[in-house]
Length: 143
Image 1 (tube, rainbow, N blue to C red):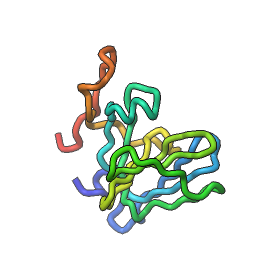
Image 2 (tube, helix red, strand yellow):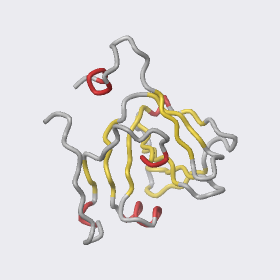
Image 3 (cartoon, one colour):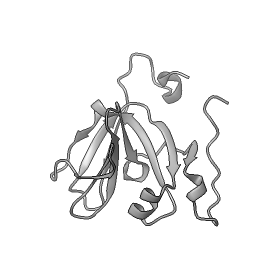
C-alpha cells in the first residue's frame, strides 16, 4: 500500500504533519509523514519508564522531527547502549525513542495531538505483558 493509499491523499499533496507535546507543554514537536509501525511494547524498559503495562510507539522519518516548544529539545536517557529516549525534564513525559543509525524516530502515540491512524498492529515483548492484559490489535493494512 502506498502512502497516498494509506492516507487518502492525492499523490502531489504534501505529506501530513502531526504535532505532539509533553504534559506541561514545554517540549513540543512536529513530525511529517505517514505513521509507520504503530505497536505496543511491554519490554521491561517501557513498563518501568511509563508505569503502565505497555507503551504505544509510532514511527516517522527522523529527519522530519522538529522541536517546536519553548523548552527546545528534550533531555535524553540511554536505556540500551544504542538507544536513547527523550523526555521532558520538567514534567517527565516520555516522548521519543531513537536508535543509533536509524532513519526513524519513534514517538509515543499518546503524546501526539492527532491520534488517528495509529492503532497498534503489533505488540513487542508481549511475553512480559501483565497476565491480565488482553490486546485486540488492529487488522494488518495488507489483509
